[in-house]
Image (cartoon, rainbow, N blue to C red; front, side):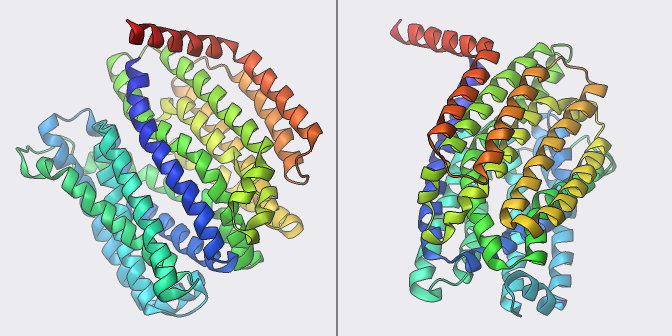
Length: 474
């Protein structure tokens, strides 16, 4: 129940973020055209890619060595992990300023020094926020972590609306400036939240820079390739289509991102809990099996519900984005496969076999690039979604297999494979057909099969709810 209590703290914040994200999707897709949304999407995508490079994997080093340091040395560990990424951020910004014409033309289709200056601030804020949020997350300060996410999303939405009406009248600049400012506001709030840890008593971290880099560098390649894997769809859409297709695809992603809130809250809660449990009792693998079953069932049920309701959900987007209903079914594989793989991949990180992440990411980015090249030419943005969905299935399979080699855990993979095949059929049909009565019957049947196969999870959940209610009455 302690785990559920901790998770619920993150879940409340995630629910508020979900509501704000839902409002943002409804409002912004009605204010901005698919073309302008496509330009902003390129700005955010490239920002995330460059930020992943300048981290040098030291964000993962911070997580790995956090519990090995005494409490008074953890701030020193944070500073040590931050120094090189900040230096690299300055170098990258200088290079982009020298090539501002080429860079800005790729992002928004026009030359602009102002865009590059904004981008420099953006990647600085992304880098700082990555480490500050990790600090808060590893300390399991669920309320503070959730509040910062809410501040970021709320400020972004409000400023984007304000700039739309007062200055830019539908141009992507409103979104770009709002996103950059929101990251800076969140960074300021994070520093204020953690101000005591930077001014209090501190001792030097035992982990050397060499140790941190040795552990983190493999993540540099893995994370960068993973971001390329996640961005391959938009990169190929940019190369083979236009900003309108990217914008339509972004609209579909905004729907999937609502589902991804579950992924975010689980990953945020799960990583420190898993590492702490491993440090206390590395032989207790049943703990990970139980969590894997619960997460698998919840994500599969959400997937089926979203697919069955796709033609209703799409009306929350602006009229220009209606075509996204045939794009997001396979995109929904992203949060499902990623979230479930977070429970099966742990062995790689526990045993410090971080080089495996490189091979996993390389295989997935290659598969996604090839799939996108073939399918986009035939099906446009829908083809990109199908390729990305299956690439995430490969991502799950490789993470699970390689982690099992170094830290064997008897996960219930058979039932998950059956259920994944069933929802893949549903996603395939939803990518080309509107929802009719026969599809709703299919969804009900698949949901029944999933519930039957995971009946132990349902029984456990009902028992925990009953116990909680009994305690509350008592």
